[in-house]
Image (cartoon, rainbow, N blue to C red; front, side, top):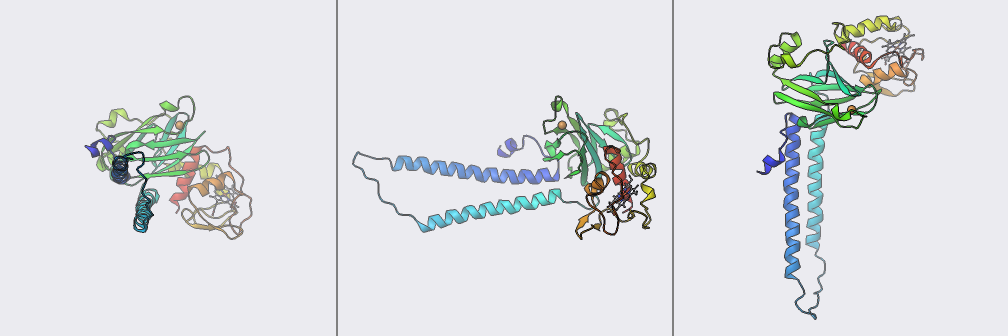
Length: 325
Ligand code: HEC
Ligand SMILES: [Cu+2]
């Protein structure tokens, strides 16, 4: 009965299950403590009620044992839940081996979902069951927040910056995406669907031969900006058309700028000696604010691409540089 009422919204991901175990445990212990404390209080109120007008309150000194046990007990209980919560949280947010990566762009008022094969969907996220999913997310305009209640995950999308959301769906089915950050007039309509398919169905879907129930429902949006190219291919195209190639190679040779070979995920040493991990946000910043973090041994001659690349194009360039890892 209790577990039923606590699980009115069934969880459909590994983190969701862990979160529900955590929440239910705290809820049950909290309920026991609440009823217990209140019960003792009510019982004492009757037991020690003044019997007559000259009934004097007894003098009760403090009790070291009770004080010690209550302070110690509470500290232990807080520490246990802190460590438990911290470990689960760290596990939820940390990168996993062979996670499947999908790009998300929030905009007023829908979600653009981009796959490595270049296909873009509006408000439709299709993922395989039992695989680690990594959403590399950003926003075109204002703050949005990508929220899937059934997975118990939520993360802001921020203009000019990447944020990550990670989860492992563990039940095939259809779930809902909400925007959880008020973002303008049609905020409440910024709703999408997550379709969790079996791994085989998902592969069929990627290959374009999927015939299941969802075949009718999900269709590539006409905003498909990849022109049939994968993200990496589109990124390579930009590498040429935006003339990155005049200063950067992909084979390890140094021209005016450092090579992209092995860049992604490596530690880059900057002028001044600080080291920084070359992740999605670093590459985005290198394009928008090239002067901000200058690589050691190079002069700050890279032009800014602010306003010259869309979020989709930045995703494509990041995918391209990632592929040269
Ligand atoms: C005029 C030459 C020039 C062009 C064109 C240019 N860059 Fe650069 N880029 C540089 C130089 C020089 C650096 C190193 C100094 C710095 O960090 O600003 C650099 C640094 C970078 C870095 C950081 C590299 C590292 O090893 O940490 C990235 C990423 C990058 N550029 C991407 C691009 C992309 C993508 C394009 C095309 C859209 C591009 N650049 C176009 C000259 C250029
Ligand atoms: Cu929104």
